[in-house]
Amino acid sequence: MENLLKLEPNPSLLSNQTLPVVNSYNEWDPLKEVIVGRVEGAAVPHLEPALLTNSYPNNLGFFQKYAGQPFPQELVEIAAKELNDFCHILEAFGVTVRRPDIIDFSKTYKTLDFEASGFYAAMPRDVLIVVGNEIIEAPMAWRSRFFEYRAYRSLMLEYFRRGAKWTTAPKPSMSDEFYDFEFAQKPVEERYALTKKGHFVIRDTEPSFDAADIVRFGRDLFVQRSHVTNNIGITWLKRHLGDTFRVHVVNFPDYNPMHIDASLVPLRPGLALINPARPCLEKELFKKAGWDLVDAAPSTLPDNWPMYMCSSWVCMNILSLDPETIVVEKQEEPMQKLLKDLGFKVIPVDLRHLYTFGGSFHCVTCDVRREGKLEEYGF
Ligand code: NVA
Image (tube, rainbow, N blue to C red; front, side, top):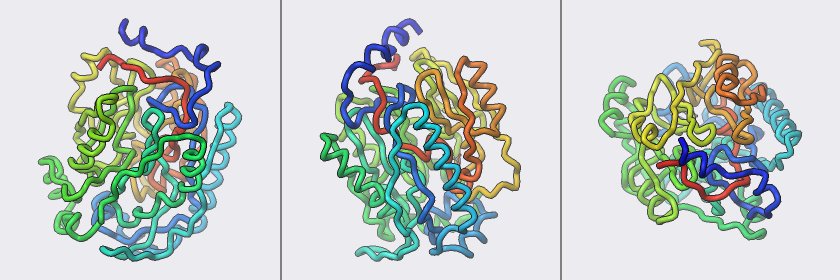
């Protein structure tokens, strides 16, 4: 731990410096500016192969009923209120909050390779990642998410005009060849068995990753292979980030993998949450680097809560305001207690209805600016 403490940034020194407009190296440094997603304009996607793989069989009826239509209005209203209230809380903590444009995602579009309608701009974490002073738009792998970046374009243009380094990673064509249609049609158990062997619904024909499959620990970034992130996408990321950053592939016994932020969540230098239902297979790597991995507490969510896109492990999908302060869902008392026992100040905020859209505080945000600079944390 000694080497970790030595490397920890000193916020009081940094607060007097002018930070670049885009500046974020990890998940815990003091938060200054954040994009918070929106559910207004959200639409239910058609059951495309990658979505079919991610969702659960009991949800098929919902997708069949609403595919291509706006999300039910009552769901949108209550989740939009939760997000607005969350924004006001962030502002009360001195954080600048930015929002994406409202887009009608139920509109259909046709590219050279496919026809689809859209999804939402609720989860900026899926599409955007800040690595140092650069903001990267991820390729994405769902046809319904092909044009999701559009909701963030006015913000990207503004950041660019103010001096940010802005990159769009190459998007896959999302042609039929990109997907394994047979995989998506297999029964869940068969899919899980194939995933265990390293087989996923997207092929390695073109680079693809969702930004939320990456988690940042300063110079070291950890990424998982998933149904939206392929090997060639990880190669693109490694080559793009060059020698300044090290990209490590990590694995979890998650046979429905999509997004790492309910599996591995760093809290402060030397301490990270892991998911006891899918413990990281590379624990040794973290131990050697002086990191303690603590099991997240399970969710208090009732079994019958509608969850169309993710598991209740989004209870560990927290947002750090700084290395001592963490936003946690208001009804997740066991998670709150765990974090308090670890010495954190916990800010409880309602976001349970947003879970239904597929995420929690980390998913619905993209930290554009945090204090701090490039550091190493023992790896
Ligand atoms: N797909 C994962 C992560 C969600 C943020 C889950 O459902 O637990």
